[in-house]
Length: 106
Picture 1 (tube, rainbow, N blue to C red):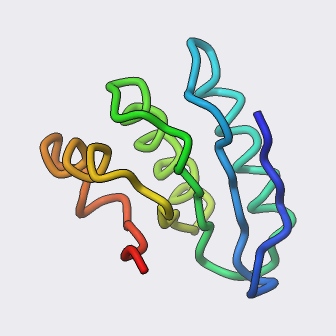
Picture 2: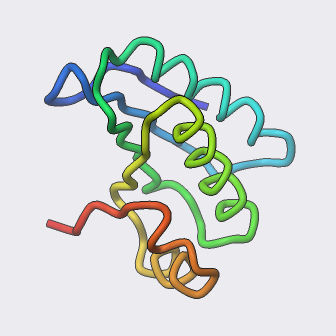
């Protein structure tokens, strides 16, 4: 899984890129990578999570919920970017649209 930790614009904003669909057993590793991004991102509250490669599946929803929980336990929050319409609709359907912030499409 490709997970760069260097933010594109603000040094206090971490960046987590999920470059392929999430497989069985990947959630724990993603949470560990998120903790590493948080530890290296300074005092900023926000971690941007690029999810452009993720399909709208139950496993994706589980992973995003766990990532948000991990971030909140560290006093941070995640904001998703490059979210597909299908994933946005699934987040809304399961009630997570208000829990996991989504960056508006440009």
